[in-house]
Length: 19
Image (tube, rainbow, N blue to C red; front, side, top):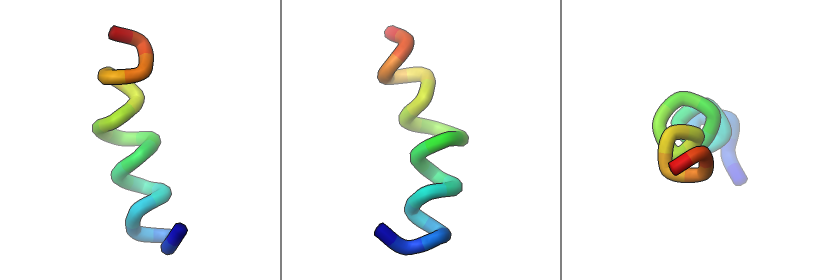
């Protein structure tokens, strides 16, 4: 996982994880 992907993961996908 790249740093950029990690930022997107915490920034965008976090909403998906929380539902």
